[in-house]
Length: 217
Image (cartoon, rainbow, N blue to C red):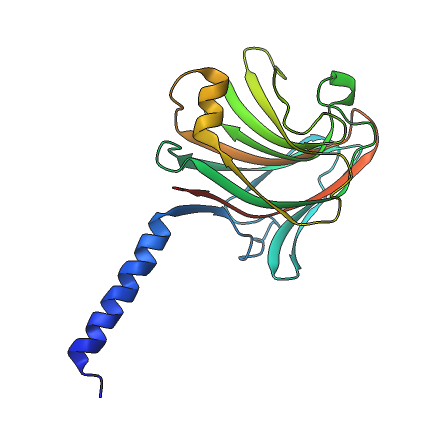
C-alpha cells in the first residue's frame, strides 16, 4: 500500500514539475475562455482603424482560435502585456491564413495590407511586427514608419498562397530580432496586437490565431 508519506512526496514532485513548467512560459492567449459580455476575448481590446471589425473566437479542431475577417477594413485586437524578452526570448504562436488581400505588399503604402500581423510594442517609438504578406518575400526584414516618430521593424514570416488553409506553428527569438534591428538591449514588451487589414487594396482577407506565448527556450 502507498503510505501517506509516500503519497505526499509524489504530490510534491508533481506540483514542483507543474510550477516549473508554468515558469518556463508566459501564455498571452489561448482563447479557451471564450469572450466577455462585449463579445471580446477577456483582457483584449478592439481597435478599429478603418471600417467595422469582424472577428470571432471559434473552435477549429483541437484549437481555440481567434478568427479575423477584413473586407476593405483595418482593425486589431490588442492587449497590454509585460514580458522581459531577456528572460523569455522565444515567441511562439499558431496561425492560419485562408484569404490574402489581393496584391498586398507592405513595401508600398498604397498596397500595405496583410491577412495577419502580430505586432509587439516595446516603447512608444519602437516596435516589431511579424506578418504574413501577399507579395513581399519570406524572410525579408525591413523598417517602416507608419506614423511620425515611430519606427516599426517588419519581419515577413510567411508570404503568398502556397500554405493557405494550413495551421502553422511559428517561433521567433524576439530578443535576437530586437538586437539585430535596433542594436541595443530590448526593453520590456508592453503590448501585443493581432491585426488584419485590406483597406489600401480595397480587397479582403481572413486569418486565424491561436496559442500565443513567450518561452524561456
